[in-house]
Image (spheres, one colour):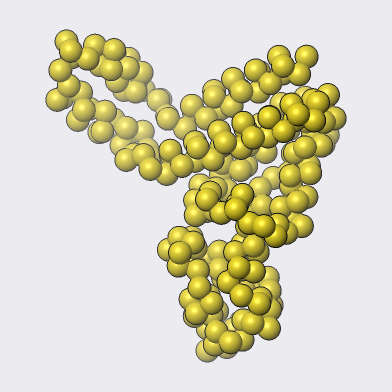
Amino acid sequence: MSPARPLSRDLVLEAAVRVADRGGIEAVTMRRVAQELGVEAMSLYHHVPNKDAILDGVVDVVFTEIELPGAGCADWRDAIRARAGSARAVLARHTWALGLMDSRRNPGLATLRHHNAVLGVLREAGFSLPMAAHAISLIDSYVAGYVLQEANLPLSTPDEVQDVAGDILAELPVEELPYLAEMIVDHALRPGYDYGDEFGWGLDLILDGLEARRK
């Protein structure tokens, strides 16, 4: 089967991302990517020299999907908040990228452009260079950790929260574990509770703390 479009590096990387989305980064091989494109594996070598080049490239693809922090935001926190929310959404689609994004030794232009933009927002807001480095490390660790935690939770909808929390409560020795029972009954089981809302609360706490240090 021939590819729908002439084979190119971009097409190879798009196919590699699809393979990773379905089977994780371990599934990305020259052979599997070629199968995804309907071509022979040898034909890929005209566009990418090896698997390492594909891994470098898919990281760059992921970074192109994350919204760059807006330079026009009046408050640096608004710019970083929007970027963090975008990163969370993108990484939720590509959870395989979590362990890959900071491991590559040959970052692409999109990756470098993204880091430069984030650094620029912080520096223009008055952060010293060491403080900007601390801020980036803290924010990125929070986003990545939250995405990983969400991906491993045994629930993803309010109905599932109700079911899981209700099952735990039914077997819970309330007198022995009163604070946990209180958390389930008066928090997790309240109408409208959504664990995803915790992301914004935690992020605001981090940004407020950084703002206090910035001043």
